[in-house]
Length: 236
Image (tube, rainbow, N blue to C red):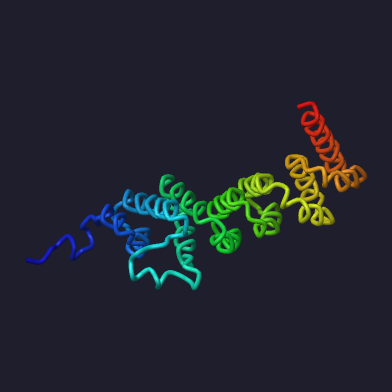
């Protein structure tokens, strides 16, 4: 007898079996499953669990997984498919996709950097946040560029992400202070203050003489914060 549900793609997939068998290829297909939002959400979540349990991005015992892997055994297509879910209508799907990308980590950085130029602001917003959580230095320059994004939320997440990356971002941020855009200089000085690394003090002191009063005020605040934090550490 013909299985009508299966014929028309209505039959609910056996996700538990896919999880047991670590069927990455099958799970990835479910990220585009249109008939049930919960299926997309659960598939994204399980992909994250597989990543976390193996300590390797989407490694799988499934023989078909070789199609999805590069020479290092690292998923090459997986981050792109997960990034496509960052604009999903369901918040749970977006959050699970973001969690999975964070767990993939460094192998997802280049794809996330490209996503900072995505036409959809929500994809750019999530991508900036994920780059901050991963903390890879390759994300620093693209995140600085994202401070010029026309969307306020994206600029905010890019700023927070640079602060989360911290000290590895300082040198590149200091170089970017040569920008002709005073608003960018202002944001960068604020970020240096949040990072609080003493190696940025001289650059911030130079910003005290900036032609723009907003940049000068940000520099004063940043220096006070760094010096206060330094004093607190000495007392501790």
